[in-house]
Amino acid sequence: MELAERYPAFLIADFLNLQIPDPGEEVAFARGAKELLRSLADLHDEGMTEGYVPYPEPGGLIPWGDSTDGDNFYWRTGPDGPDSWTVVVETRNGYWATYDGTLTEYLAGLVTGTVDPDGLPPDFPGKNPAVIS
Image 1: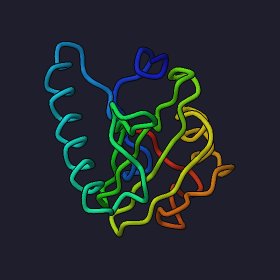
Image 2: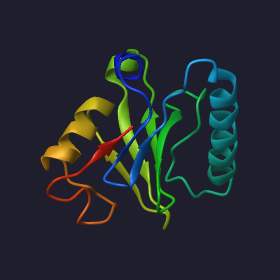
Image 3: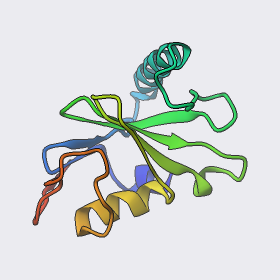
């Protein structure tokens, strides 16, 4: 919530897009998120999510971003509230990776090089990644 309150949607290294609704566009944003959840539910029904389930199932995933390569990024919800939600990455080739920290920790770690871009291009985000809003 704090990230969304402080920053508009942004793109890291021309690759990772953080989806934050623009003021007044919350309904369209929610509609897009529901479409992604339906797609995730279809993948789950086909056994292609390595056991991950869409929200509102317990521990369900909520989309927060995507990449220019077709990767999807999710929060994995939990009973302790949003401050304890972790990150799940679904790559375009069907690889699933997890990061057991918050979204902000994940993004900061990618940019500083302290988080492995597991499942993403090995050169992402590069030595001096640009963040564009």
